[in-house]
Length: 398
Image (cartoon, rainbow, N blue to C red):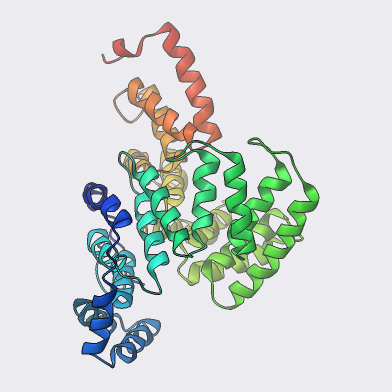
């Protein structure tokens, strides 16, 4: 697996450019359909060459695949543009380059072609995973556009945005609508989230045990099928279900088996979950060391939770890790928009521990984490706001 370079500067630059082009591309009527047809006429073997490139990707012959995709993309073949963009996004045979990935996606989405909806979705994901003004609202626009082009997975992300009020006003009814549509469209991981919400209730809805178990069992069956077909994401979610005993019988051995399968398939969330499971037995040095290695791998691949948990290990000086690296990891977690990192860094800033005290930034970080629904950040926000009533933040710069 190529080692991903996390390029926060690239992300920031990406946002600026995306903000300039997003609306124009979304609302423009020109799809360049004639150019797509023209490209096919120039090379009657374009589809055959594309299949060859996809075959090379499947056996991880990245360089040859990318050469074919780039040639086809330069000729105006939008499917090649889409797959080349994914290569740059995930670092398949090239250094991860979000800006180049963006450029190819933005070009491809102008065409009326089979992956147009998925292309809009991928652009939305780039916004969603970035920081900057209006990123969430623009992500929502792209997800809505993906739905107009019949890419049903956009329901998954829209459910999340409306549930937490990210880029839109919080709307429980609309969130539930999108969750149910994602469930009907057979996206099992999202369906599990929907079923858990129904099971526990809260955030404006009453618990519905019968409906929760209907969707939960249906999703669990779908996850097994997808996991056996090689889905790392489905394997990860199955691991969680067996760990927690939700909709299946609790079984930690099965949980670890599915987490390992997910991690080996390259799912960064699976790597994170496996790491946490291994680290739960501090008396077993071998498992603990393996857990740290999986945590580092997921962190290097940009998983916000892994970055945050690695920072926590450093902060507590566990397993011989130095606390001097904790601040840098939490800063990186904040840049990845992980609410746990926001809380951890906010606490350190409020206390002036390992970093210069800055209560104003601590307050902002705790507020940002609270908006994302993080209970620790919500609790810290209440503490800091109460303290601010007696000690004005402006005077706390000495």
